[in-house]
Length: 108
Image (cartoon, rainbow, N blue to C red; front, top):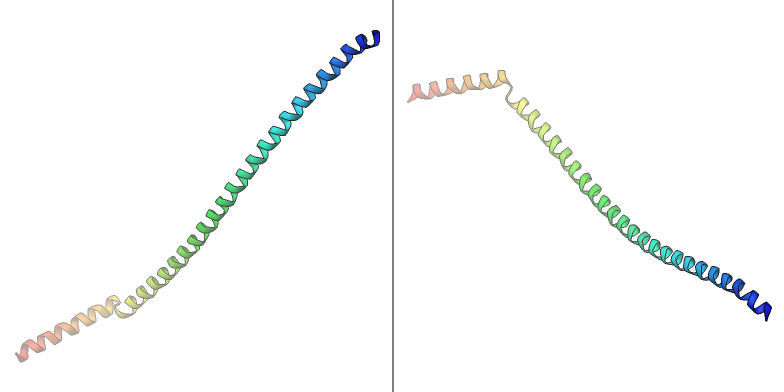
């Protein structure tokens, strides 16, 4: 019986150590599960944000193309205006119109 009595404190110590180890293992497993869930949530959010960034890049490219088209159209319009009515030509045209009006008034 002495071996049972002597072994009992040793067995209790081993059981206590195993329980403590089991609790730590259980907590580690729960933490791992929680971290995996957070990882999945972060991955889903990352994919969502990447999709949004892709959409915004496409919208930006479309708007940049529109800006380029409008800029070219404005430059063409300005160059046509400059070709049609430069300052000297405008004055000459106004002078001719006044002469024509004067001739028409003379005939009337």
